[in-house]
Length: 308
Image (cartoon, rainbow, N blue to C red; front, side, top):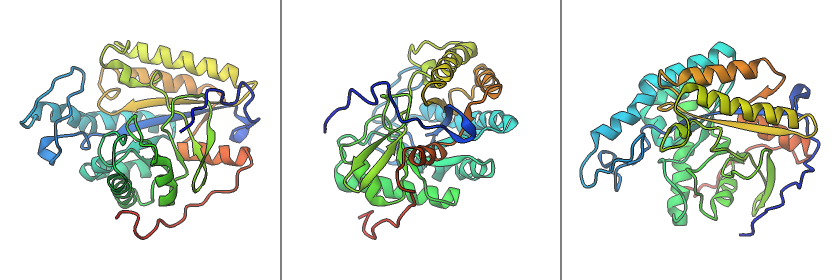
């Protein structure tokens, strides 16, 4: 696998987003609760990373499980209300097993006009998976999202580390328009797979509420808002000369806390006063394909033996 350090070298395609916007903003709500590793779910170990790192081996960990339960119970309703009040669409980056546990989140997201994309089956890395295991994980994710959201997912984002074959398997599966497993640009780009061109929408860990955790630098709601607003303002200014995209990463169990949600609300209010295009990741990927002259994209049926 060759690496690309050059990118567009400061000269990206002259794409303009819908309505003449120069900056696209993607709000991503990660739905992972219920997909974290837990012995009670039959997994090989417990998840151990939360606000504090606490490892429990060889026994169930109801304390850790309750930390993750906060997101669906209290965090998601706050985030949902903040988005609905401003009419902003988001992409729910949802693990398949999480939606098995909380199917109402998928239904509510669709009702509100959000996209439901795939975040894997479990909240786990794909690096090191054998091909058959990875195929099953992708297929199970697609099946659950299709059933709970009503349509197959168009986007994919593995927890941090993909395998070297992930994109080829996504393209072989047939339904995926894009993936978000890159952190190397402020603008989409296209890669070639064995099954044709595939759009990559880079994600971001800095404009992300995960920085409230593990000495990430965010303490108060204002920290999140100030940092993300600074990134937004800079990209908006740069986008007057060339297209840009900003990803904002959210988690129901993190930004959904009562002392943090105001940071998201302040950011959304700041964005609302501009001409930026707030869109789902599927909308951004389609617009990028169209603007760069790639053929129109349509999902094709997955091979009958894909999950085997």
